[in-house]
Image (cartoon, rainbow, N blue to C red; front, side, top):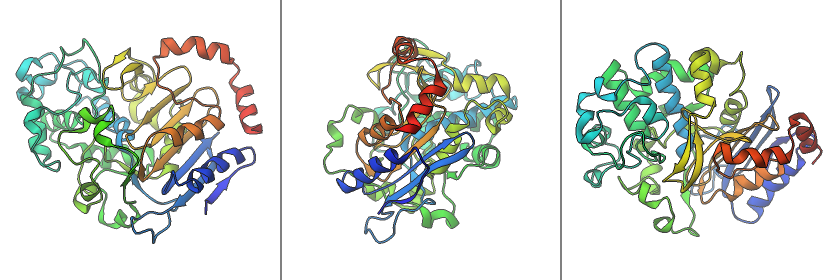
Length: 386
């Protein structure tokens, strides 16, 4: 049974969510939509646990995979706001060991826009324990980049959090989770956690890889292979993993919290602007670089932490999680799931809301959006009618 609510005008969203469970494409998920400062959809269905004894509820936390990355970026930007870091100072000025292998010109800006040349951990890290964050940081510091920093981009699929953590530790002595827990999380009012505390563990959903997908044959496989285990239920469902910080992938969150955050991304009087200040807020939500992303295999635009085109500001995660702000309709949406498969489920939800989750460069998107019409309110009205 689907539990929760969908306001008038959002019946089609509930219908799609119900169908995904009826067809067996979903085993446990949460869906939330926020608009004009309030939640207009909050739906839950399926199970939280692998034994299917505990229903998914509105308070269920689940690992979001790469939806984690914008929050890593916010941790770095909070430190920039306080003057502890600078976007364009070489990382090696804070972390001297990082200069090895030709990385002496890498900046925090390169890292946040996925241009540092380290989209994956080096082969030297292949046998490392995924929970050994010190060894993983050291491996990144010692490795040569895969391309000259600043000359190309590719999502730093597994390395994003460890890079920012290494920079923070070297510059300030604080860890990624220190800044998130003390500054970012309370400032934004998030029900989302790195290193899930003991008292929140009972809310966490077990992840379940789909048997219909051979993960070793997916295009993303080379970027996730080192260190091994990020799709392994034995690891990702363990207490040790849930209470660790693997910043690129293991933020645990509710759908409502993610949708509520994305809905307020552009608010000039919102908590995000208060946390970052006007300049960094603008850099977090506007395109900073557009080009071919070698990991995604397509042209796209990165902000300092998010993907943006003319239709949305968004981030998705391997396994099917997705969160976005619709620039045409003004709603924030999050679809979070424990059933690790593709993004077709979130895409079908997006379609009935009038959104498109295709990843394209912002400049390429312009013509499409102009033809679709420029009146956002008219589009939103039509979406509510559907």
